[in-house]
Length: 159
Image (cartoon, rainbow, N blue to C red):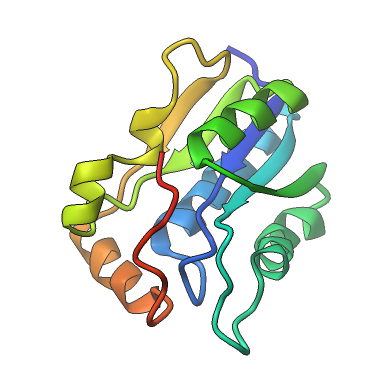
């Protein structure tokens, strides 16, 4: 199958820097975009909560995340949306005509996650785009916990 429009849906708001899974998502997007001559749309869904002072905004992180792809000459657009991640990801994929969605999983971080489920699990079965999920290793999970913004609100619009 040939892909023409890739969507990389990346979680950025909760973290001080890019997680190992987010970096692998970007690399997979880069490799596939080069191989297929595809455009890349990078999406992050922002929760409607204020961040700590002096913490880079989601939009700023997203631009920094996309920079290596732009420097390589790839066609890249970035977008921050607000709302329930699974709904916003589907709407964005439809808007950009994505034929492949690259989504990460940070696995279960605690009891709240187990109860509410994950964004990837909440994606509808009739999503038009194929889905490529990037899962963390044990070392990735430890690093991801280190990158979480301290005192980030417990309530987060998962799914």
